[in-house]
Every structure is written in structure tokens, then in C-alpha cells.
Image (tube, rainbow over all chains, first blue to last red):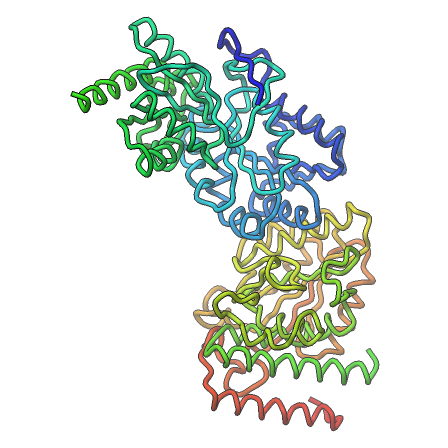
Length: 326
Length: 284
């Protein structure tokens, strides 16, 4: 792992999908086994350049997600490395059993890419808003579950998972996100990235909530509160060591995720804490309700996922921690 | 298929049926009906039709078989054991703790099983993926697929059918085990399939319908399919669920049933009579 943090967390100049496609093309040039599958969302995912360069290794099945996952499983059986994309809602809840049985249970090597996580589905609305995908994928044995915070992470991770045999689920924003890391950084799957040091509490975040967590830490800094921030981009296998260390050293944890507070990052962290070092904890995330249509900014406010909300939860958890100490 | 081959294949089928009865009775119960109805197609495939090497189950240039109706594992295991993929003694471990012969086909446990199946409909898509992969590798291997008739009520089968027709995956030869029974009753009562062949034809497949217990007809249909260069093939096998003994033949309840020692003896003696008839050259 070699991480250089971005000085500012402004919106990136390149979309996540462009970086994903470029990374996949690079993988395909290096490794002739890499193939790409989609179910009629290549245009949305911006992966046409891959098709242009590798027409024989592109399989657009049409609108049939279950068949896409099954075909990917068959290609994996024949030694190929399929990257299969569709929107996160279809990539998980629609084809959960296909991913479970034909891929994971059969010990295949398929990379499932679910786009538009949580509120980033924005104008596609509640029907297209995966708040449950992390939970579904986390419940499948031997599945690695990843949610990158920015384009530097996805570029690095795509290249890594192409070389690691096994099932991977990557939760990927298609459009612009805020920059967290400088280009060229590299990451270790299963290891949290410490973005800020702090002593009063720790925010453990993933995906778009990482930049929001940094905002929260900055807000709290002005109030004299010192907060550690961890980017838990690997939701499974989760980095127990970093969680336990954070609990012991800061005594309070807030998780932040663009997902239902049930079954996702918050649940995964709570499991580790309860079994090892129970400390006061709060969860930022969607409060077990359905999504709705709107702009990303509106939805972040509506579902209370922004830096301000995270900061307020941190203050709440610190108050609880102090109460316990008294 | 010459007469000698027909005789040999029918004897092989009879042996598979005997082993299926023994393995399931040894355990006490199991998926016997749908195992017995596909025995004759398995006998044709494993007795010369498929390019395989039992000593080298993962031979790169072999033909492939996806048994999408994964609950028919017991008959596939019997065929594999009789062909020498593994010791016949292993058949006694069917569904017992720690076995390599689980209820539903598992490619990571059983030598010779090409794909894990059990959730109906899914084997159709994985067979398409295997066939596509072989095509991309420039291999001329065939991918065989066995679907249950109840199974094709699953929508995924039709996604796969549309895909294979569109991509002209001519190295796919699929079978529907049309035994007309499913767990809850007769197919036509639960959710009728109407004209299966017409549906596949409409999806761009080459379709045939034959007697699924006549090894010569099965062999001929496979050869007809191999003569097609533009289309995937579907062969509808008219079969009898539980074919082989009075206890199970044509019985709705035979999908999964208990078999005691007495019933086993009766079934085996019926199969011995059939074997004598085959050897005596009498017609079925």
C-alpha cells in the first residue's frame, strides 16, 4: 500500500466509469483471459471503448442479467476472467442466486460490478437505488466486497482483482466523485486506509462517504475535537485489526455508508466491535427506508449522509463515551 | 449406431439404473424419478458419443456436459463410476456426511462433473458460457446440456435460449427430459409447457423430438444435431419419470422417495429381467 492523499477533496475531473473502462482495457492488453460482460448498459457504463478494442472479448447479452451471470460463470469455468456489469440493484438483488450458486458456490472467478450505489442512482430513483447490495454480497461465503472512494482506487483495484482468483463484488459510482487520493496511489485489499489521525473518535467510511467523513473531521477540528478517519474500502473481508485498534485508541466509532444501516459497513464494524472491544458506536447511513428520486445533493441531505450529519453523530458518540467514563 | 453398440449401450443403461437404485436405497431415499428418466441419454453420451477421458477428467479438449437438473446427480455419478472416473464403491457414499457425491452435481467434489448445478435454470446459462468459452479458445468441443421439463418453466432458460440462438452457438446440444411430471403433479396441470420444440425453433434452435429411452434414436438425433452448423440444437426426449421399475415408473411421487430393501430387491430383479431380454436380443 502506498497512499498519497489529495490536498483538496474537490470533484474529480474524470468520471469513475472512464477510469474503470481504461483500467479494464489495460488489464485486457496484459491478460488475454480478461473478458467484459454487460446486460445492455455498456452505453451507460461508458465501456464502448473496451468493445471497440476487444470486440471478441465483449459479451453484451441484452437485457438478461441472470443469463449474463450464468454465462460469466461458464466463461470462468473455461479459464476466462469475466468482469460483468449492470446497475447495482440488478447485479445483486436480481441475480443473487445466480451469483451464489453458479459463481461463488461453484468457486468461480467472476468480478461483479454493480454501478450507481445508494443515492448515486439519483434521478433513476428509488427503484434503482441499491441500499441493500453490500448486505446481500457480504452474506455470500468467500465473496470479497469492495467500494472504492474515488477513481484512483478503482483504477488500482480493477488491476488487482483481475489477478486474484475468486469472486469479487465492486460497488462503483459511474459519474464524478470527490477526489480523495493522488493518482498513482496503491491500496491493499482487506486493509483500511488511515486518512487522518485522531484521538477522540474514529469515523469508518466507504465510498462517497469517505470525502464526507473528511469534511466532518475538519468541522470537528475547528471545535477542538480530534477524529481519526478510516477508508474501509474493503467491506469484506473487513480489517478487524484497524477497527480494534481504533476502538482501543479513540474509544468511540461512527460508521458512514451510502447504504442501509442494516447489513452494510456499520453492521460489519459492529460485529467486530461486539466480539472484541465494545465501545460507543453510531451509524450514518440510510435508516432502513426506501430510496427516492432526486439530485445527489438533495439525496445526501434527505438521507443525512453529508459531513455535517457525520460530525453531529461524532459529537453524540463522544458524549456517550464520556458519560460511560464518568 | 450398429447393433453391437446399441446392445452395449442398453446394457450400460441397465447397469446405471441398477446402481441408481442401489445408491438411493443404501441411503434410504433420494431423487430417483428424474435420475432414472435421463439414464438412456447418459448411456449414449458416456458410451462413445462424448469425447472424454475418464483418466483425465479435466482434459482441455474434451466435450462438456452440464446437467442443469442437478438433482439427477445419482444417475450421472453411476455413469461416471461405471466409466471408471472413480471407484464404484464411492456410489455407496451418496449424500452421506463428507461425501464427494452430493445430492446435486458439484464440479469441485466429483471427478467428471463439469459444472455445479442445483438451482434450476442456471445450468442453461453456464452451458452457454462454456460453449462460448470453447469457441473463443478455438476448440471444436461440444457442450451438452440436460434440462428438466419442469425446469424450463424457469425464465432463465429462455434468456439462455435467446442468447444461444442469437449467437448461433452450434456446438450446444441440449436435451429436455420430457417426463411430464414435476413435484406438485403433472406438468400440464401445474404449468403446461405447450409446444416445447416450437418455442426453441422460434428462438433460433434446431429442434427434434424423440423417444428418450431409445438409444438408437438418441444417437441419431445427436448426429443430426452435429450436422447443423448454424444453430444450437434441442432434442426433446419423451421419457417416463422413474423408468426402470414398477415402483417408480410414471409415478408423480417418484421425484424424491424412500426405497426399502424389499423394494430394492424387487426393482433389481425387474432390471435383471430387462437385462436378460436385452442380451437375448429381444426388442424393448
